[in-house]
Image 1 (cartoon, one colour):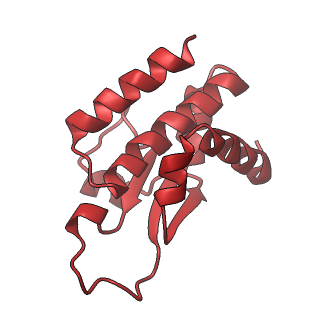
Image 2 (tube, one colour):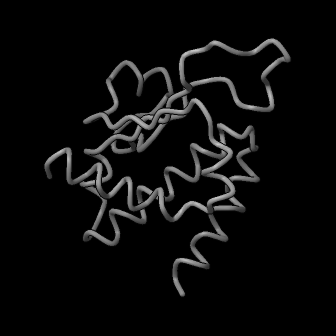
Length: 129
């Protein structure tokens, strides 16, 4: 799939994120890369056949001090290859991207893994309707 087409699916998935969260995201870049690097997978202790679909890089809102500012944007990396390989069709691809975005945006907001899993469960209950 062409990068522009994948990025259009990312934009579609982003529109599914509740507006109150989208409006609260500031200085956050969503970057699409082809694949996670072998070094990154090693650093994250991920071994095949497992892979990485996305990664939040930055300082969560809950960890920022009063003097935080004038910083480069935090980043959410989305890895196109793993998403494409795992998706059964275009709808599944958008759902996979959305789930990854929900997870990584949760890290941006400083949510715990348990809180993120609860939100993801709610997403799937809503998505399946």
